[in-house]
Image (cartoon, rainbow, N blue to C red; front, side):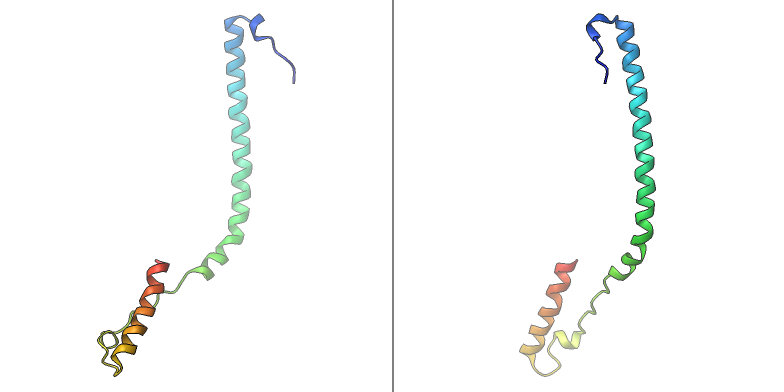
Length: 92
């Protein structure tokens, strides 16, 4: 890149250089943004089927009869209910 002696330039020349540099930067940013958006669109085409398969099915809530231990073994039913609720709470 060419060296520019800013000290030798007038205020107007430095201001014009700044404006040109700002315009060039905006142009390069816009071009790069367009490239990245195009790449993201290509990637999104491959991402859509994967998203559908990754959707988690909500866990079934235990019935009141199981919570109250109406199934017969009160201690066992309570333990199973706690085991079911704990992973659901972590996933949410």
